[in-house]
Image (cartoon, rainbow, N blue to C red; front, side, top):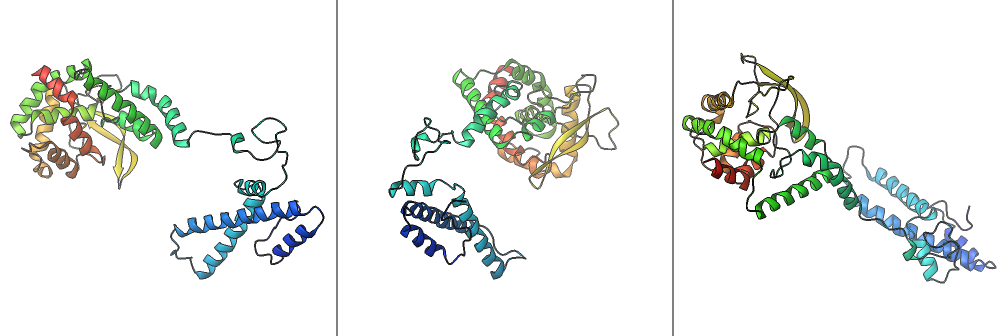
Length: 352
């Protein structure tokens, strides 16, 4: 145990110990080091007190007595931290006040170098930057599997949404950054659209026009929703044998549904929290059947009355979400961005 180390924050003899150290032969250096450590302990105690002040203290078990005991515990913890190396503040104070250089075999500098030198400290990049860099590398395979022109990583299909919900916040940020760059590159190149997206829009456009005549919903709105739900046709639900379900709007199958179904575990949301749910979805023989069933759902269900005939993209998307079409809290925002995005406009111009 180092001479002069205070073990109890409430010890009334600590000041006397410092004075005795200072008076003893060759003790001034030890007293200086002990004083520097006590100063660091006081500093850490103030830091912990400020941190405690930011937390709620009105719990069922909180009282003046518990806060008093908590304060004493924090005081002792701060002292223990300063004695065990702490933040390095006491060592810097000790050196600044004339303390003797001490050999530090654990220093990052050259072997045998004495004392504390800030230049010797091993430096690391900020933690978020490291995680974002590593996350971007880890997310690369997922990024490669998505359409380059897709601005939102999760386009609503169960598989894609499941992958995206499993990412950390740093992975999502890195993935979004890469996608934003891809969108800008496509826009700068004159609005180039991937062949898969163009083929998808060209194939479903006539069926969307027919459904529009029945519902009053603009055909481009329905194409955008189909793109959101299926990742521009690349992530549509398939049967175990690989055959397509042609379910462009991911409509679930209830007990009254007489046709084939596709079973999947999907990501749903409740009170803003994601969870996995086993669900059955309808299967159709063609995209035309899918659009007809979607139009029937919109026209026959009273909860979608406010969606019919809606010509404002944001109002249409918000109406669908408010009616409970999807539980994803970002569904309306994703759909609005696809409707107003360059990919849909360019693809429609070529399909027209």
